[in-house]
Length: 554
Image (cartoon, rainbow, N blue to C red; front, side):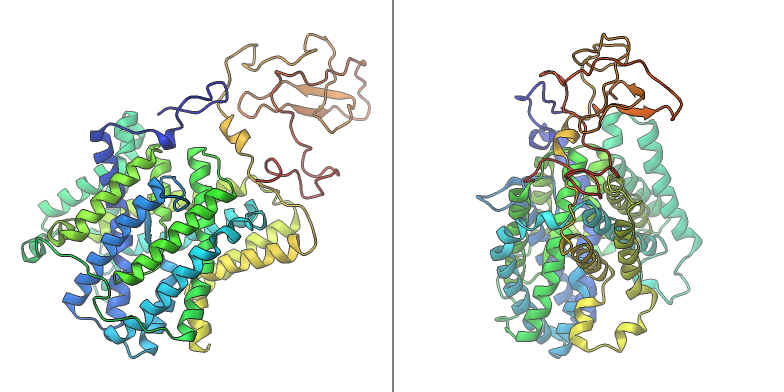
């Protein structure tokens, strides 16, 4: 894949690279397989909880796939100011599952409950679309400690779902077959196959590791009689989702308030996903990018309410797939969106993908969900967790995220409207991270860090020009150069040359009794890479928390 460097500004960024049709097809289909289980599980859970019939449930799934395809194309391709133009796959957000079930059951369940849900979804989508540009300006209130915490929570919250599939799927909970050794063997075999392909395969095969793992795992399960494709022949060849299939939506105040709160949390989640994909692809993300992504969420959510589906957000597991495959082109997601539309219009084709056994999906999901958490941890690595306040934001938010699953009775005793909003680990953990950051860093006017996109784009070594592969700064020929990083007064000690990956030097004091002969102070030359920021922990204009994580105004 092409890489962007500042020495070649005209070079196409990998995100904007248009791949050959064959690769677009394979990589796009891989995204669909990775996404499919998570896409259909929400309508299945909500439909079963509201007591819908089998035919109504199938219709929900087809409507969801069709809307997912359209929403993904809008997000990746971009229309006007709608869409981040990044490889982000759109899917129904898990954050909305519990609130939608509570709203639907409160309205009597069945299709009558769906109508109230759709009224709340459409209203929340409109609110998201209109609020997107204002929310984009609030990005400065979501520093790395918040974004990293939210992504880590998303990954850690999704991993149990992958493990649940590995044990046979949620439908087997309480059944003797749940956790059957054969299911665990399928999951472990799929996961090991993916790992082996990544380890031994060539780059092209490694990028298809998840797709190959799903195909291989399904083939083995079919040969052993554990993959059932019987439902394929019973599915219709063609089906179209029509607007307001179940009737006109009903707009009620409290369901609308609950769904708007859910979408606010989803906006934080999407913001984290946008920064995560920027981190993975090394594509600069700014306030405008975030606002455009949120507009796409709002437009997709409105579309979902009209076409009998649900609220939409970027799918975190596909971010993990982008990182694993290293295929960063957004046009791959456009191709995936085309496949989703086809699956939404061809129930028979969709039923083939639906026949992939849950344990096989679980084995692949464990790797992908874990990669989402890894991206969050990677961002947290840029945070000074020795700072007590940052550590508390992370620690308390993780604890809050585990609360709904660890101690469910807490929420069973709450009023229904409150339970509809808070009974989600992602929602509760994300809210906690945002509020604690406001309490510790914003209301106290403490400076926060931002992502240094210039540093990220420059992380590839430049042409070797010296023994350590870094260009020599002016004055480097002096035998006893005591040049220290900008903003720090030279002290007796040793300054190591710049690291070729970070373009930063490291100044190491030698101790109170060591004396270094004075040498010239070498000012930064025009061709010298950007001088490093003041190290964290030193007092300076950027406060005790550390330097800004990027240029002001990001």
